[in-house]
Length: 236
Image (tube, rainbow, N blue to C red; front, side, top):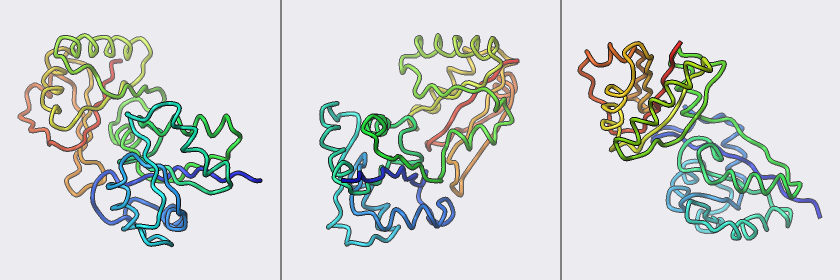
C-alpha cells in the first residue's frame, strides 16, 4: 500500500484574513485534508474553520503533538500516513517543524520513506531577517534564551561574540510578557556598537520592525509590545 503525504501547513502569526498570508494552493490543500497533527486541537479548529474544510470540523481527526508528547507516541501519530492517508501538520503559529515539536514527526516520516511536502506561508524568523537589514547570508536561530537574568546576560554576550567571529546574525525569541525584561538585558549586556533589530507583531496591523545600534536603542524611549517578537543581533 502506498503511504500518504505529510503536508507541512503554515498558519497565521496572528488573527487576520487568511488570504493576506497564505497562498490559495496552501489553503486548498488544507481544506481537502481530513487528518491533522496539531499542537492544540482548539487552536487548530479555529484555523481550519477559517480555511473551510471538506468535512465538518467535528468529523476531522485532530491528533495532538506538543512538548508533552512522549517519543514513543510518534509511532501512533504516523499510522495514518503508513495507511495511505494524507496528513497535515500544523503549528500554533507560523511554519511547522521550525522551533516546533512537529520536527520529530517530520524526521520519523523521512525514516519511514513517507513523502514530506512543505507548503508556503509566513515565517516570523525569515520575515524578521528580511526586514532587519542585518546579515542574511549567515544566521543562526537559537529559540528561547535562559529566563534567569544572569544566565540570559551570559548567553547574550556569548551570542555577541559568536556573531563577531562568524559575521553572522544571531536570532532569538521570548514569551511576549518577558519582552521588556529581555530588551533591558540586551541593552545592559551588549556593547554599544552591536546592531539590534526587533520585529514585533509581524504580518499584523500593528507590525513594527526597527534596527539600531544598542547605544541608539538606549537613548530611545521604546515601549515594546506584549506581542510575539523576534530579536536579532549582529556585530561586524
